[in-house]
Image (cartoon, rainbow, N blue to C red; front, top):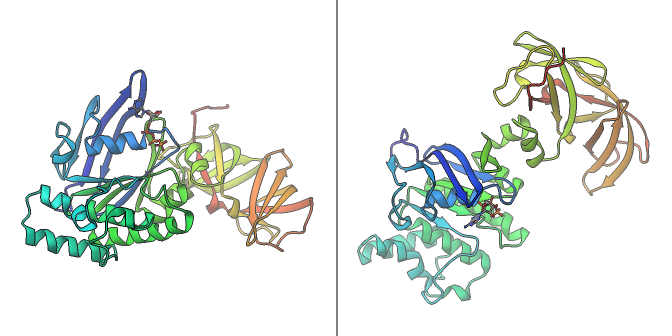
Length: 368
Ligand code: ATP
C-alpha cells in the first residue's frame, strides 16, 4: 500500500450503549506500518473503538476507512483487518496448520499458496515444528503466537490486538511484548494494540493514544506522552507525577515566567503542553516526574530550589521512593538511588531543572 494512504482512519465516530456514550466523537488517523496503542483505564472505550474498526460493532455516527476504503457498512469478514483476542480464539479441533491457514482458505488461495504461507508464518513466530498439534497441546504463550500467525496469514492491512497478552504471566508477557514488536517490525504491518498497562504501551508503541471517557486525551509518541503530558489525567496515567500549582507572571514566547512556591522561575515557553498558549495571570499546573527531582546537588543554572521535609522512605531494591513536603505544604514524591539520601526524616534541598517541567493548562482560570 502507498505510504500516503493511512492504514486506518476513524472519522468522528460515536457509539452509545443505551444512554451511555462509550465512544464520544473520536477521530484518529493511523499511518501505514506503525504500532499504535490505545491506552486507558477499564471502561474508557478502547475495545469499543477497536471493535468498531473490526466491524463487530456499528458506530452510531461517523465513518471508518481501512486502506483508503470506506468500510463502515461492511461486515467484519470482508474488512481487510484481523483481530487477535486475549483468549486466543483458536479452533480447538483443528491442527495449528489449519488454524493458521484458515483465513487464507477463506480468501480462496490455492492449496500450494496456503502451505507456503503457513510455513512462513510458523517460521515468523518461531514455532516451525508445532503444525500438526492441536491448540490444547500448546502453552498459553505458544497459543497466542499461533493466534498472531493466523491473523497475519491472510495479509490484512492491519492487525487489531485486544489485550492479547492479558492472560499471560509477567515473565511471558514481557517476552511476548518483545516478540510482538519484532514481528511488527519484520512484517511492516500496522498494529493497533489495546492495553490498560502503561508500561506495555510505552515499551512497544510508536504512538500512544491515551483514552478517557470515550475520547482520546492525547495522541503522541511514548516519550512525548511521558515528558509532555497534555492533561493531568495523562500525566497521572502514564507514570507517577508531582503536580505543583503555579501562576504565569510573563510569557514572551521564548521564556515563560512562573510564580511557584513563592519564587520566580523562568522556564522555556515550549514546556507548555497540549498545544495551549498561556498569558500573564493564568493558573497552571507544573508536572515533574519523581526521577527529575534532584536531591542536594546545589542549584545548577536555572534550577528551581525547593527546600522540603522528607517524611517517608520506601525501599524498593535498586531505588527508593521518598515522600517529601515543601515549605508551602505541597507533597512531592522522589525516586532516588539507595544511599543518596540520609535515612529517616529531615530537611532536604531539592532542585528541579527547568527542562524537566511540563506546564499544563487544565482550565482557563485567570487571576488578575
Ligand atoms: P476494558 O479494559 O475493561 O475492556 P475498555 O476501555 O476496553 O475497558 P470498553 O469495553 O470499550 O472499555 O467499554 C466502554 C464502556 O462501554 C464500558 O463502560 C462498558 O461497560 C460499556 N459497554 C461495552 N460494551 C457494551 C455492550 N455491549 N453493552 C452495554 N455496555 C457496553
